[in-house]
Image (cartoon, rainbow, N blue to C red; front, top):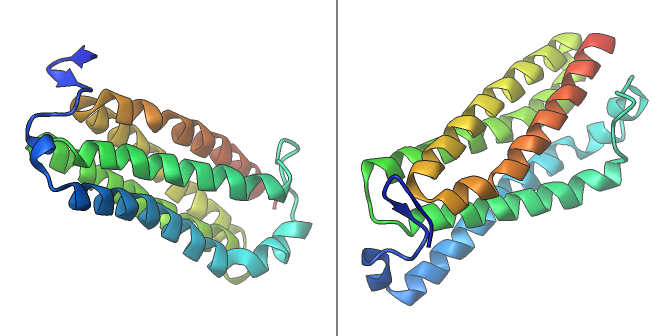
Length: 181
């Protein structure tokens, strides 16, 4: 059992009294919500991935398109599981703050794809710069999410680190495209 400023990763006493069906239902909800955000984003932008994006000047370190789906799926599932771990904790201002930051970063995540992929033909390079501003805000939101998760459930914060690294990497791709397109 790990303890950081009163933060234990053992199941709390009060979370043991939750009905098992509610616990399982909430796990499913926390897994599905990020997946749904990603799925809707991919539906809204699929045409553009094969459209303007395919012929755009991309960063030399851009991975093949086939990499993005599996990586994002794994990140969305990990994000959902981590958030469920936070939800399992007893209600507190720290838990409310952590869940609020989760929602904020997820909303920024949801807005980024349509702005980046869908906005470029309409707004030109301005959409790429706007999407870069959104991804920078997403990075701030992720840092705040991780920080607030750390105060509630350390393991949940650690589970968000690959997502932070991936979004940092994605921000370099976005910046390159904003500069060179």
